[in-house]
Image 1 (cartoon, rainbow, N blue to C red):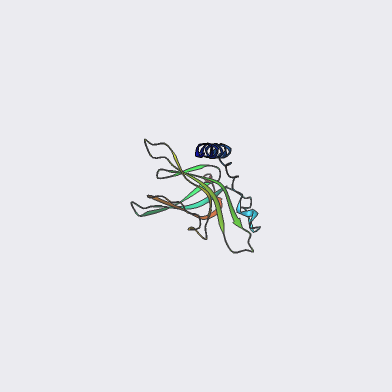
Image 2 (cartoon, rainbow, N blue to C red):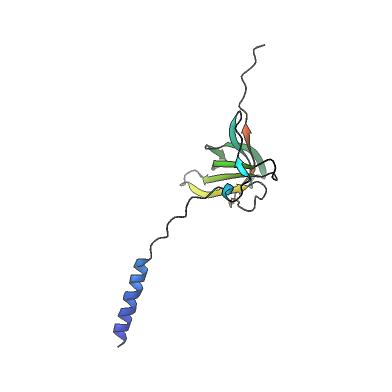
Amino acid sequence: MRFPFLLAALVAFSSAAAAQTRPAPPPPPQPPSTANVNLRAIPDGPGKRVAELQGLDKVTARTQRFYAPVGESTRFGTLAITVSDCLVNVPEAPPESVAYLTIVDNKPGQAAEKLFAGWMFASTPSLSALDHGVYDVRVLSCTMAQGSSPPSSR
């Protein structure tokens, strides 16, 4: 009597497990501008769109400010930081800068490890922070970096 019951339970369990598949990957993150109509891309002007970032090396306790051009990869220690987008608030709203960062750790002799992919807010760095034992990275602002001007001919 117990055998058919156990067999039926086993078949039901295995068919339920087979019906479960891996969940679909989450959709790509929407820019915060869909939630906040005040955020916009930096107005066009001379230079390149960049995110001003600040990195902290916890081993040496040194901080470094650097610019990361939008769409390019920038190095900080063993980290490769790519800024996909950088948005600012309209002038009428309180100041805010938001950048979508992808941070990959490229330790020598090891496979690259993706540490962070998401939006970082300049006004609230702890809201979405990089969790790493050696490095901290935060967004300071989004701006236009001016290229070097050619030497004058005097």
